[in-house]
Length: 82
Image (cartoon, rainbow, N blue to C red; front, side, top):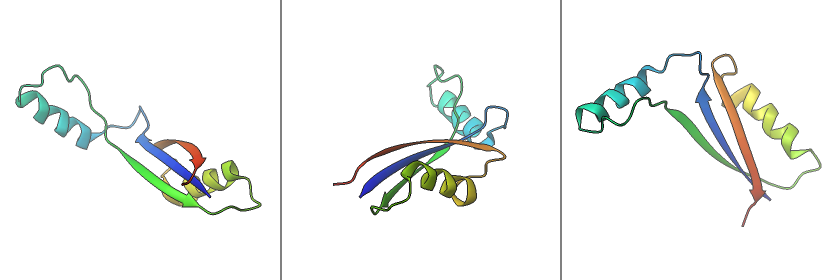
């Protein structure tokens, strides 16, 4: 089995109002060192062994279901599941 860790972020050209709001709150709380903050998603999948190529499988899932490819970028890591 494989563990797949997927990191999803908004594309740089897309405004992140949630990230801006949290960054503003941090500054108001005394954390003025934080100049920018962007919020994303983290997904973790356990995929059973298959004949299919794991990279192809993960890319298909990300592009069809797990992300909005118009406004989000993603990257992933594959490792052996315990």
